[in-house]
Length: 345
Ligand SMILES: Cc1cc2nc3c(=O)[nH]c(=O)nc-3n(C[C@H](O)[C@H](O)[C@H](O)COP(=O)(O)OP(=O)(O)OC[C@H]3O[C@@H](n4cnc5c(N)ncnc54)[C@H](O)[C@@H]3O)c2cc1C
Image (cartoon, rainbow, N blue to C red; front, side, top):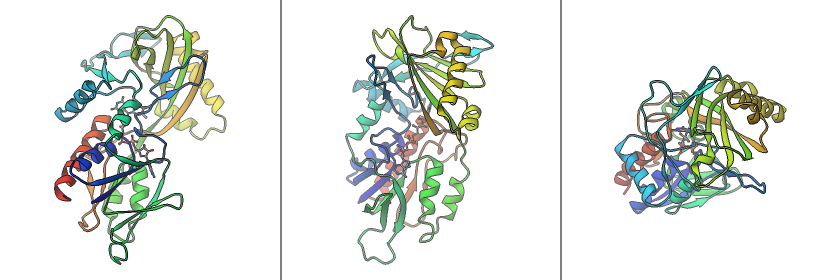
């Protein structure tokens, strides 16, 4: 079968790999120019090249399936253990541990977390820079052989026998809505409408050569800064300091429509100075990236959603199904991939 997947994040890549292994012909449509979605890496264009994981800073998980995946990435040299301790900022002090947190091993990709998406991409065919605008169900008329047409926001149109939507819930809602006139998808749409997301700015800051802080990650009780990741501690022999700061949802919502990104950046730098000391408010290089959909605030408690029309298979997967984490996104893709491998083969 020809299966179109919309979204090259970890859920879409995982479902795709399972379906290719079952003998299907899979094509992934991705609006950006690389695989990985919210597992992302950026490099500065400065003489000192800083590398920042400005999406999820690490991988962690407890299920047996995700542990198998982490081990696969380890064996292929993509990830390694990073740390099992997360520091905690409150009232002007950084404590070495979050009080009461159970220790858990966190894994990182030393060459950049985007290596994970690139590794998973080797099994799949892609259309990058191809934003899907909608779906048309053409099964009834049978003028064409396949029941689905995937309509790109440019003029391109692709036929598919089955479609998987692997985007944040709000974008999935928009895509499923375009096909609702032809199929009864109201139940699916009403479920997707219920998932709110936290937003964040990822502020990437490079400080040149200096003593590196001894923490890897800090969870912050601060009105602007929610997390800090010490990117320099992901590399061997790195003596230039690179930090990613995530802003709180409240700060981000307040500034999301700001006309002046410079003013928002100034407030983030001020926040960094408050948490780490005044030096931190004066990076040598900085850039921010807005993630409107960082993490879902609610989970649906099921592995995926599927339409009831078996002649026009349509499914939705992502991190909001069985949890609200990267592991949940992987498991959602894996479960649908295995289910469809059996059902459609
Ligand atoms: C800053 C940040 C920090 C995070 N920290 C953690 C953490 O500490 N722990 C944790 O477990 N998780 C964390 N996450 C969340 C984790 O990264 C996600 O849960 C996971 O990567 C989601 O994978 P996904 O496949 O569901 O979606 P995504 O990775 O969002 O993939 C969806 C893809 O669909 C594409 N797309 C969307 N619409 C269209 C369209 N119309 N046409 C074509 N393509 C489209 C997008 O470009 C994207 O590539 C963090 C995320 C961010 C951004």
